[in-house]
Length: 387
Image (cartoon, rainbow, N blue to C red; front, side, top):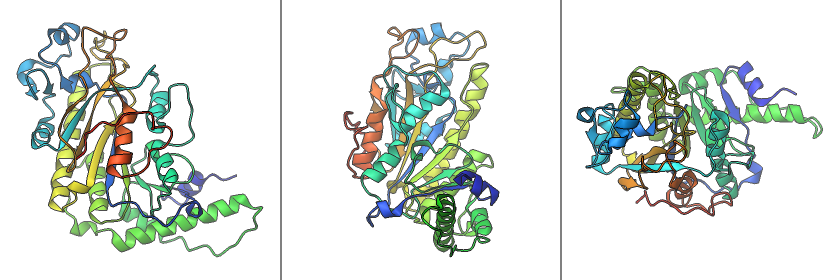
């Protein structure tokens, strides 16, 4: 049987994952958008929000610790990496929550399994067939023309699973141009021809998506990319801003910034990545504020794990456990949440987690979208990082 993704690759459109509108009511989602930002590879949180007042930080990281004179102070104990000057300004404005000690019990050190746990909101030994956002949308019978956009050629994140409509897209304009070659299918296959039914439904969904983009997406020549740099990550943030400002009614946009698996020579490599992150999100905030959309946008970073506390022999860090993440937006209640893990109380050489990542997700479900929590998130206590 020809698979959905194979079919769409053949027509060079990216991918559109088939939903099941008959299972959903006509209820529409709020206009509030979540941008899920995956820091792929496992960013080193200890060199991102730095406990510069703790002498153990410099003892355990003799070669990769950030010098005190370069750190951007947050308070008397913590500071931002020197590449995060924009983050510092956003934090000072009250639009950023620093989420400390984020993790989960009995963590897995595999990139593939750990990110699967984060994206499904499962326990370590539980395997689920859908992401936590897919589960939320289906449970609440939410209906949108498109449930989510995956910017670039990356995983679907918490939007994986059956019953949800997502589009993998690099360039919306190219998507519109290429999908014009598809005509609306008129065939009515028998109920026994499941493969043909599947492909025709995918084709209809592509046409529906093209019509939405064609009618509502602001032309690129009328939406300035000034301030966005030319790297892939920044270009994807530009397109995300364009989608949000165009009021397409798409509740989730996923973007990724990869390369954080810094096993060797971490200092320069992480500095460049954090600079990309800082410049991109600072410009995205500026653009959304200019168009009156910052209040309706929530940006949340996530990744599979943090890094080990002690540096390795290659002046890098290996896979660890707890990490720091960020929530940004006009409705974010700025501040520091959770406890910064103590360096004199490690979990077998790793930072101890104190905030379960599913508590952060539950806050989005209930306090951002106003939806009912599903079974997989019900047991967790929310983190009050939203106004």
